[in-house]
Amino acid sequence: MAQEKSMAAIPEFLSKAELLKQGAEARVYRARFLGRPTIVKERFRKQYRHPLLDEKLTHRRTVQEVRSVLRCRRAGISVPVVYFVDYTSHSIFLEEIVGSSTVRDHIASSPPSARCEGLEPLAERVGQVLARMHDEDVIHGDLTTSNMLLRCGPEDEV
Image (cartoon, rainbow, N blue to C red; front, side):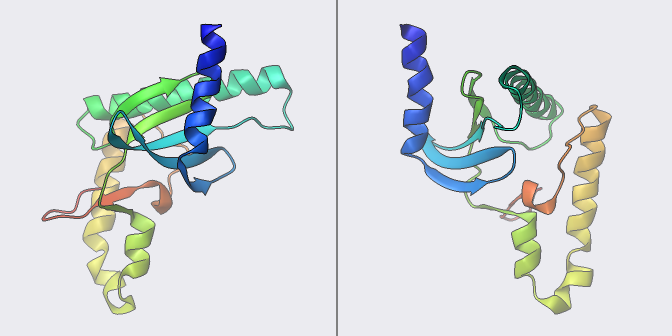
């Protein structure tokens, strides 16, 4: 009975959250969790896969993603804090990096005249972070500028 309640709790919680994006693998929501701004990544079922295979793959990918985030944090790489993981709904609750933007949005908002020279330090920083990830045996798998956040402040951080 308790498991049935917990199985319904996450979908109900997400129905009240703000859907930010949906990709081929997951939906990304903005919500408040335990009073904190939170991003929730929910991996959803693939209708074209056999249900048992889909469950196994989705579970494994959720576990691997959480392990990679934790490995990066231990290595001192700036990644969001993992607040909670629900393996039944394949949902990961992460710290929302308030005031950040994607590297993609940052590049798009840069004036064309500044793109060549002005973005070189950013590209160098992205390469440094990626090298540190690889040193920790973390391979992203879907590394795009849309999947990288830039903290804006006195010293921009990827």
